[in-house]
Amino acid sequence: MTAPNSVENTLKSAVQQLQESGSESPSLDAAVLLCHALEKPRSFLMTWPEKELSQQELAPFEALLARRLTGEPVAYIVGEREFWSLPLQVSPTTLIPRPDTERLVELALDKAVDTDGDILDLGTGTGAIALALASELPKRNVVGIDLMVEAQQLATRNGQRLAINNATFLAGSWFEPLEVGTQFAVIVSNPPYIEENDPHLTQGDVRFEPLSALVASDNGLADIRHIIQAARGYLCDQGWLLFEHGFEQGKAVRAIFAEYGYQQVETHQDYGHNDRVTLGRFVK
Image 1: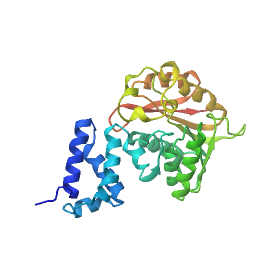
Image 2 (image 1 turned 180 degrees about the horizontal axis):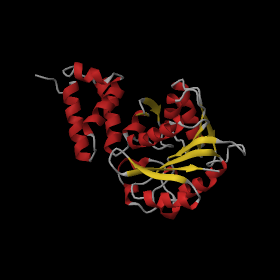
Image 3 (image 1 turned 45 degrees about the vertical axis):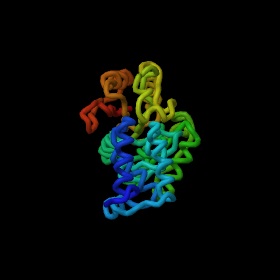
């Protein structure tokens, strides 16, 4: 008979509690938290399901589980999230990198291959987008900028941990830290784009993330408009500007691009078939 405190039964109990609390991924949450508490890989759980856990091993897991049961994101609890196969440290001062943002990376890489020059990531947060691009384009310089000094420092640490040496991170508001005349072949951004009264702000993991990285005025479009307008002074001729945005904002973002004279403007869908990335080309 399997012991009550076995790996298997500990996971079963945790999964049941997480289901009841409303977690969208209770099995994954339980496994990640237990591995983190035990400092073991996922393979350990499958190899030793009957192993009995001591109270010294269970106590830290139960503390982590209690935090998740209040709704705190797993990424903040364990301090890490994988993005583009890169293990990134995260903190409550930054957004948690999400799989849909990898679509922005894919499209930016596609455009970068056909253009020479440096790449800029605005609102870099953990450095996820900048580091993904830098890892794929080791001969290109990538710059990431974030308003929060804590985020800039976190992104820098992530780059150092991953030994990605062609990414540099600066602190400041959008283009402000850059020298006048600095030019980029590709500029990418996952800026704040949620409306201030959006009900999703009170649901799920978003409740724990910084509002300054989520919310923008003008129906969520204020920062996107500012970047589209200002980017014209920092893009090379034929350079590309790409945004992640809300699934209902594609038409509005395309209109702003057109208003400021960008060409080849188009919207691409994410993996869930929602409008997610809009891009345009700047021709001087």
